[in-house]
Length: 104
Image (cartoon, rainbow, N blue to C red; front, side):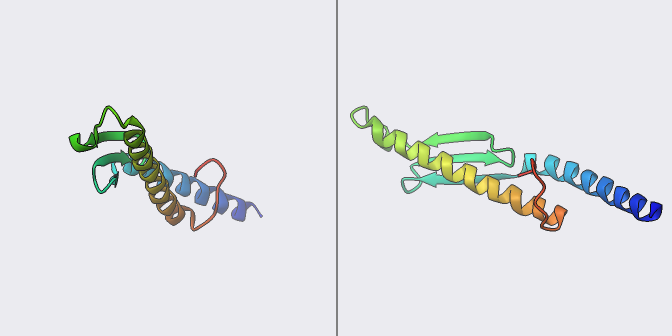
């Protein structure tokens, strides 16, 4: 019984170390998303932080701010979704597919 508990604790520690390493790695992973045929581009990292936002001058129309707002919102939402999927896939490899509350 004690051996199996020790083994379980070692596995948990190894998983914790792998996850800490992965979290650091994910901070450096980046992806880009766009909307409006590339008129609005956004680059995010694995922490869902916006690293860069580019807006093509052609879609900046003071008379149609609503369109620009919608393009930015779409690009941001898509980038966050893709980043979350990237993190989820990477974490799944470490956890063996187990869903651990609070991780993703």
